[in-house]
Length: 532
Image 1 (cartoon, rainbow, N blue to C red):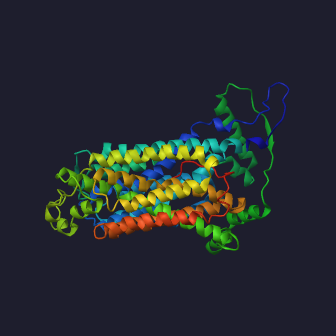
Image 2: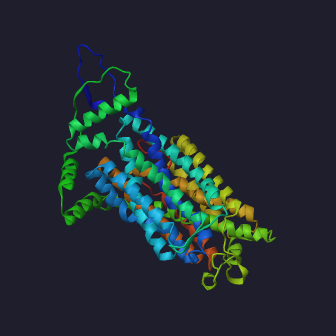
Image 3: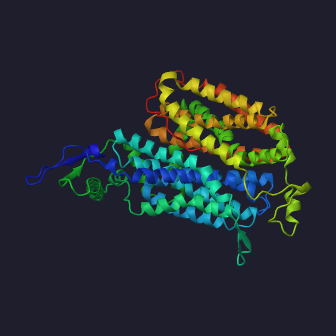
């Protein structure tokens, strides 16, 4: 947008002939990164809660699987809607209310006393947080020129990466406390895991409050004919960037950006439509081309790959702290050699018996099994290692992808992770098995590589929707994966890891069929930190 600003000379004041430096509005980037980190905390933070809340909420392993996935289900059900509304009603108009609503539903979930109520509140959290998770990229990028928007998004991604690393540290600081507070009015015992849920929602609240002081996207306003409002925003941002010390900026008009007439007409129709049926029809017309003609094969391959990645990277991750806690329990009991699945079988808790006990908050389960009030420190340590590996790995992939190509990266990551998943079943050295588990979860590296392929495979008018649809299938994989683990873990643990490993190996084979995958040139498909 900065490149399209026309400035008129003024006799008495010096005017600048270079673009307005909107990219120097430094607060926008960290706020965007905090929003992305908030999405991570809201969706993956529940994995640290489930092992210590099972007795308070009487959760079975199947119900843990549902709770692990329900936020992703909320994101899936609403992402298409929020994306459409952001394109027609405004970026900030969608982001701010959804952040407040997400925080509200998160706070409510911290006071729940049974499975069904927390399921509903966590679904609503996912439903609302979806409004900001995708829209924030457009909002941030539209305050910058094209040459600087990638830099701004990478800056936000760096903040997101820091949030990934801090997640296990935050969980350890909050959950492993020993206090509890009885609330007679609600008939609940407020424990650290409940507070942790609220802490996970704080980034949404902080970001929403901060964005109250920011304007709507200037590009969005200008594309909808609000030229004077756009100019006012440019003046405001220029004064902010220069702290009022530079000469006055003079703007008379803004040049219209090139836009396909069909796209512009569809956007105007969407903004003016009042019928739900017409709205759904327009959304369908934006999506249908991806599943027709030559694009059908590309869409199917990309969606299947994202489904397979998320099936493991999120589905298996949701039970990672829980499984590590079970292994640590066996090690504390003096067991030196045991497979992951035998440790799982040995530490099953019969929640039906726990619920019958009068003091169930103390948490004695079947056969003397104890309901955990804390997570073992090893669960936090290995989670921290995993997030650090992700942060470093994304940086390395970004450096080497143009040199080695995308196909070798996909095949290598899929193959190594898939084989690791299968080997976990047979390894009886707990520490070695945990490291193979870590390798299995790093299949999330492929998310950004597949996104880069998607950007290159589709034209501009279909590109954003293609990425949106593929990530929707990915999050569907999170839902399916978490529920598969929830259903099979206590009874068929080995099958859980076999499904995960084989599906990743199948993805490695499918990667060879991605069109143009043998090309080493990554044009617009830049590799960046991607939300798991």
